[in-house]
Image 1 (cartoon, rainbow, N blue to C red):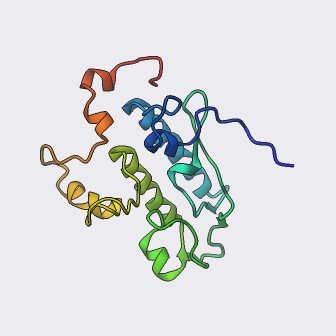
Image 2 (image 1 turned 90 degrees about the vertical axis):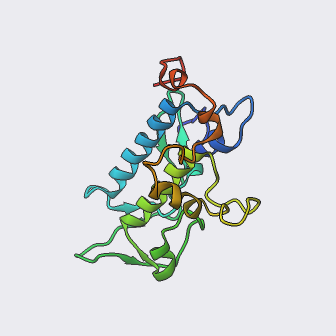
Length: 183
């Protein structure tokens, strides 16, 4: 029997993509809090104490507790990191396309950097409110990383931010206010 901590706020994916009366969009402050919590969890997995590569890091596997603390879940594909001075673990490619690092997909060489790439994709989802893969979007917008590259290359240029429409419509006062739901 497995026992899990109840995560009343569901997954990050639910808050980003399944807008309903139960899953409300997260404010900037809460998105940052969840992203930092997920980053800390990933940093622990990659630490010398754990040496674990998650291999399926995505917004669905970031659960949120009642205080909006992020918890990583679904370790079914996790692997022990490289040992004995090796640079990588050779393995069959697993994980969801769009989150998996291109070099891992091409070679099957798994490293902590593979998870870090996936974390970057999750950050793009947090910023844009877009799925990592969305086949119903126009050509050039279906793969989030490809869509975001020009925006990231020109990040300093005014007005070139691919922000989530929910966040773009809120005023800067709302984004920085300390409401009940914010950090």
